[in-house]
Length: 379
Image (cartoon, rainbow, N blue to C red):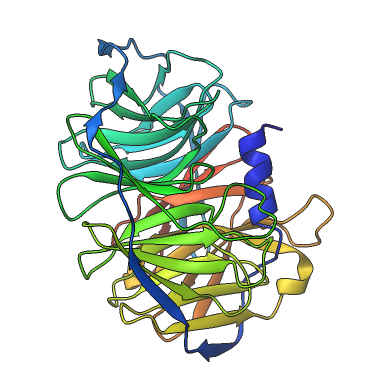
């Protein structure tokens, strides 16, 4: 298991499963200051090239259940671990994996584009404002931000920090891409032409396991700011939600109980995040946090990702925190703005991964054994 995945398992040490038990609201403490930023400069870019895709139409199997219609796309390499998934500007679903970026359209036709370094781990992925797909990439001492067009034109931009692990990435309100760098302890901004600026985050005393504040997930909020998760739980009170303006002004809100992980803007004007210890969190743009506790958290399940999807709800995948957990690790959940949760059992025999690419009618998520699934729930 790679070091990147180990970091994620450490972050996801607490558990989460699929039925609501209650909620608790905490008035968050916040701090505010302006983060110093590094001078904007052109990142080191690898030569752009049109990459020849590998892959063909994939085997698709449809399952009709009382909950809706599930479609399983079996990709060619069952051993290839797939991470982030997002809908691209071309309408297809793109995924990040070890050594490749992949694309699957609604008919099941698949293409995989190899990265220059086969040992590089593409991690999170998003649709860019320039009609391309952007992703984060780790491996070696310097992380990278990648860009790929729908015809396979690939460019990589190296991050200047000596130690860098870019994680979440999102399109910002200013026409640039923003990303969270876990080990570099900064929020990054990259223009569509490859100019990178780093906004260093505060450092705090005490032991740290992945940097300092350890930002992982990031999302553009409805207030024109970037919201991100801080997963530094080696220190008491280290779990927080951060808000950064496009000018670098930072405010932090402490999560009452456990580290947050992934974050997404909901249809209700708030931000939602997956959280350890059996919870899903919601934070308003004014900083008020509500946590929704799930009654089967003690089974050892964990929320692995969040995304907007059908019914105007936030959807999440629920897997196992450890191999010995009694949770199935094979479920989806959705939560409404009032905290109501509905769970769905995936009609497969493996475990769920990351979720994304949601629309008003469907959600897509990665799965074990080289699979990507589409779910269209019944109304």
